[in-house]
Structures are given as C-alpha cells and as structure tokens.
Length: 138
Image 1 (spheres, rainbow, N blue to C red):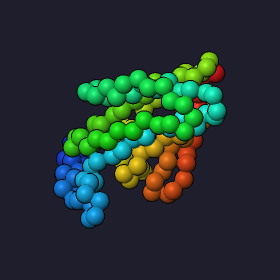
Image 2: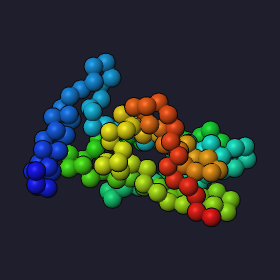
Image 3: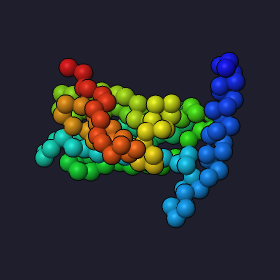
C-alpha cells in the first residue's frame, strides 16, 4: 500500500468514526478531553501554559489537586496537537499533551495527565493504567 493510499484509507476511517455518536454520552468519537492535574504535593504550585496552533488555553497556576481541562474535536486529517509548558520551583519542561497519531487510540475520551515530581504520567484509558511519559530535565 502506498503512503497516499494509507492516508486516504485512514482519513476515510476517521470520517466514518467521527459520524458515530456514543449512545447516552452525546459526544463524537473524535471528541477528546485533556486534563492536566497538579499532583506535586502540598505547597507546590504548578504553572501550566497549554496551546495548539490555533487555540491558546492560557497560563494557569495550579495548587495541589487542581487541574485545567478542555475539550476539542480532532481534525479529520489526524493532525491535532496540543502541548504545554510547565514549571514549579527549579523544574521546567515542555511536551505534547495530545498528539493525534500517538494518543487517539489510547485515551478514549479522557486524555488525562498527572504531573508528579519524577515525571508526567498519562492515563491510558483503554488499559486503565497511568504510564510514565515525560521525565523532567535535570
């Protein structure tokens, strides 16, 4: 299968999937919710700034247990990408919190992140587990 054929087949599958509505839920299969939660501990605020090419979620200071959350519909082209810059105390880093190619099949509806001292953990909804994804630079 050529690369162009693969892209066309993938696009057609996404179009078909996007037209299916989950019964009782009311959302499209293309809809995702990203959540970034501060799990650093008492007294440590997390500064988070998230955006995509066409949306700026803004900058937020989160206390322990607080989170930011937003929803969106993925692009039919499979190009949806959101990233966040984060910092607390002497630690800072930036990483993709939603990359269509990587995350679409893994997160179901919930694309949740737990920000901890050692790393950023991603909730793999399809397996109901937290997976270490991004280790903070030293």
